[in-house]
Image (cartoon, rainbow, N blue to C red; front, side):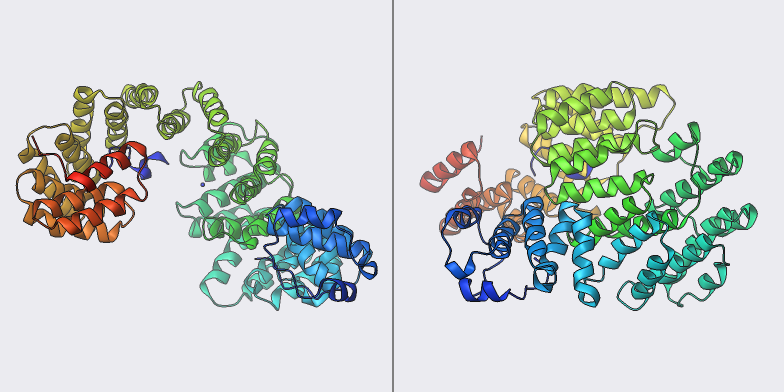
Length: 564
C-alpha cells in the first residue's frame, strides 16, 4: 500500500432540446450539438452569416449554445437573455435560458424564462417562483406556486409549504400538516414544520416536545436545532433556545455562546428552512441542477439563512464557479454561527480549484486560533501539498492539546502523525507514533496495515509485520490495500505462491493502482510467469509517474533486481 495518510483521515445536460427559431432553421440547417466549442463561439462572432440570418436572436442564440457547451454559464446566460429579448415568446430559447440562468445565478432571467415556458417550465422553476413570492410577501403568487408544486414531482413539499403560507396570512396551519400524505418523508417534513410553526405561534412547550421527538444526531437535526433556536431567540426565549443547543458542533456551540438577535417567523423563513433541509440531503450525491436550485431559492427566500449560503457555495464550487462560490461564502458574517464553516468552505473551494497556496495561507491564518478543527484542516492540507515535515508538528500539537485538556487519546491522529513523519523520512519517530496508534486501537485495520506495511518497506523483520497484516486482513478481508500488503509480506518472506492469489485479488479490485500492479508483476516473475509479469508491469507503467515509470521500464527489460 502507498505510504500516505489514509484518505478518510484527511477529511463537504443541457435542458430540453430547443425548438429552433424559423430563422435559425433556415440559416443553420441541422441542430448544433450542445458541445459546441469556444473556437466556434469566436468564429460565429466574426463570420458573415447569410443575409436572411442576420438577426440578433440567431447570433445571440448560437453564442449562447457555444458558451453553454464550454461550461461558461454566465456568458451563456447573457447571450440567451439577448436571444430571449429578441424573441420573447420562444420556448426553445427560454428552456435553455432557464437552466443557464440558474447555473449563473441570474435569477431574473430564470424567472423571465420560466414565465415564457409556463406549464412547460421544469418543475424546479416553481421553487424559485415560490422563493421570490415569499421574499416579496406575495401570497397569491406563493399559493399558485405551492399548488403547482403539489401536483408535480416535488409534491412531498406541498403540505409544509402550504402550512407556512397559512401561518403568514394568519390562518391555522396545523390541519394542513395533519393531512400530509402518509409516507415516511412527508411525515418527517410535516413533523419538522409542525415543531417550528408551534414555536412561531408561541406554543413553546408543545413545539419543543414535537421537535425533541424527531431530533437525532445527524446534520438535518443539527440544522433543525439551529433553526428552532433562532426562532426562540427572536422572541426572547433564550433559555429555551439554549436547551436545544446541545453538543459541540461548531454552529451549535457558536450560537449557544453568542445568541444574537435571532429571527422572526415568516413564509420566507419556512420556505428557506425546507429547501435547505432537502438540499442538505441531495448535495453530496451526484451533481445535478436541483441542489443548486434549492440552495439558490433558499437564500432568496431568507437572505439571513447562512446555512443555505454554505450549501450554495459548495454547489457553485463543485460546478467550477469558484469566484461565485467564494463570493457567496463571503456573505456569511463573522458573527454568524456558520462563520467557521464558511472559512473552512473557502479553503476547500480554493484547494479543489487548484489554488493551493491561497488555501494554505487561509488555513494557516485560521489555525492560529488554536482551534482543533482548524489545526486539523491545516495539517491535512499540508499533507495534500506534499509538505509532511510541516504537517507533522501540527498533528503533534493536536495530540498534545487533547491530552492537556484531559481528552481521550485519538488513534487516528497518532496515525496521521506517524504517516507525516514517515513521509518526512523520519522513520524512527514515525515507528513510535504508528506503534502508539496500534496500541490505542489494536483492532483497527488501518493502523495495523499501515504499521505492518511500513515495517516491511523500511527493511524490518518480516515476521512481526506479517502478524500485524494477517490480523488486519482478518478484520477487513475485502480491503484491497490490506490484501496487497499481506500478499507482499508473504512474497518477501519467501512464499510467492501464497502471495500470488492475494495480490491477484487486490489487482482485480484496484486495476489502476500502480503499486499493486508492480507487486503483481514481481510475484509473477518469482513464480516463473515472465510474460504475465511484464504485462502487469506495463499496466502499472501506464499511470506511473516519472521515477516509478523508469523503474518499471527497467523491470520490463531486465526483470526485478534480486531481493537483498
